[in-house]
Image (tube, rainbow, N blue to C red; front, top):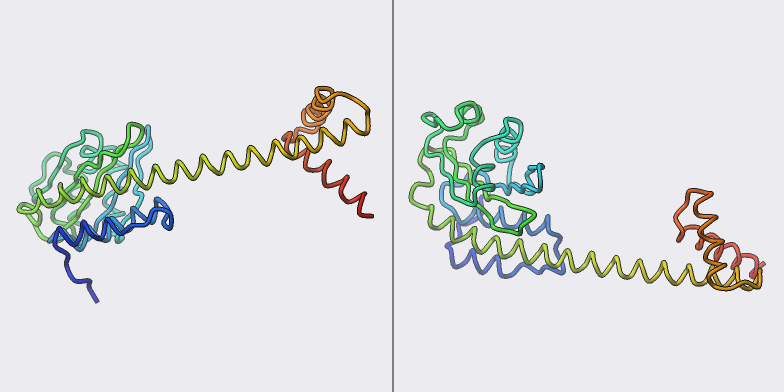
Length: 236
């Protein structure tokens, strides 16, 4: 059964309930497309396009119609979602039958059953730009709701930015934990070598580094292997 439509206030409340610690960035983007589809009248399918460097891709979508129309633009290298994302503006196609800016894409869109579209830029961060893309089955489906879509997209961009910051912080924390674990096991391995060879810490590290280089293994892996081997010997 189709979900009941949301008014803007309800939609913004829904965005505010996203718990970043419990949802990945991808899950946040999917939720944004779902809320947008319920909020913007005339929406058949919704997607989020992200552009990072030379790469353009659909990060989330509510259905195959949106995904196909996005991918057609990536294949052709131009279209409303790409132009909206890169220019930071709002681009509307009122009627695919009369669209002249992207005639090849519009013809393909008509063939898939879309008659209009609205792409609203998502200001995310300097390295990544994006757009919220809304596709409709009827011509001029979004003529009266541009302001609504812009307001929603502005709040959605905040949600995306928060999710990205959380992901970045979580990734940094994991990197730090890994670095600490690596340092700990390397120190253990150095201690083992120092005990066996009666050498200094620097000399023990040089031994590990040479084994790493000669075996084409990471230093941490060499250290872990030595610690594991020593532990097994002590237990046997």
